[in-house]
Length: 565
Image 1 (tube, rainbow, N blue to C red):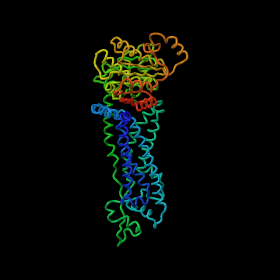
Image 2: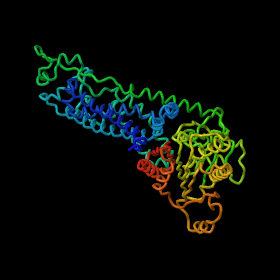
Image 3: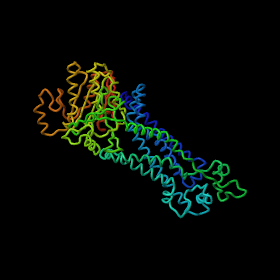
Image 4: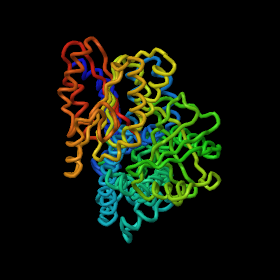
């Protein structure tokens, strides 16, 4: 229970507060449209009125939130400020994209309810016009405002039209269609299969949020949904006058013809703040994109991994941080996130980029050119950098015991950490709070080990010389192999150095038994907080998080942290 509270307690509290505010807004505005002012509107629309207006209020709240998790400069500032007070609170900011997705799902849900309710509303408006019987209150209400068209209740002013025409000839209808189409495209293109395989589709369609927010702000300006004015309520009390509608406005009656008006647009009040913050965020990005970045070295590693070493005036980083990279010669609009693999102590910053798509392939061709010929410095493409931005890995040296788990190219943030360890503990003899690091690297192919093996070999040799072998324990797992490779491994298994990595520590085959690993660490480090840091697939994250929650023996706490950008 203690581990669960440490890992998930604050996250669950935040989600419950968010859900509670959604529920409160929905119920509050549902009840608000059951009041006397909206009596005559309910005569036309029934309960569909409340079912349309309640999700609209919740939509305003969630649209206020949706941009905040992607204001990365703001989050980095907050993270740096909060972590001095509470590391647990700072960790919640690392789940910004998870919250962004949850808010998006809530927007989609409330949008669907809002649309369905308004489809019924327009059918009810149309029915009131078609059923032209002066003995029926809905028809009388629909006729109000026919002359001056100023105080109408029914936005469908004629029985010779239809709801579809009204939808495409009113501000509310047009903006509603634009908002819905933009939202559908944004959500469908955000599915993981599209985001990973066709990132450009995801990137460009996500910028439809501009249309979404413009439509959202102007959606209420038509004031289609109307209620009785405060002045009219004094001359026409619905609970008394509704049954006497045939005498409205006659001399000697206490019931005047009711007057109606819509609420003034209020959505802009909800979203203007986040919109200004996001615009400032984009201006910061624009400013940074014009700062000069010099590529000092380009290295093509095995397993189709490109390393870029760069310099930029005034650039300061911490371990595990990431940047967004733009290459104007490839695309002026696309920015892609990459973890920094250099250490803060180095005089350059670097990123390792796996060549897996059109953009990365084009970047490789721009940087490497003809692989058989050395690329001249003046031919290297211009690069723009936005960042660095904070991640969970920044907190790694705040734990006495640390587990680092990387899968494939997911090892990149830990390259920065291990390099920094080398500088702090080995080269500078600097003391750090962290006393033990357990490093796990899972790879499906042998070539992927090669670019990182040099760093591990250097660490291994240096720690052996300084008798610090107990500081870093590393376990490298090959999860897939060919039969021919297996025969080679068997032949060289007895060699002093591993046949794959060249390390004294032998490569393991298959996948780790995480239950055993966590049990062993808990046994060796009683009365400790163990920071578990992962950069890898969601399935592995779920497995590790489950282990963190289940291994609560003794008084060891495993705190789960996942790279999320």
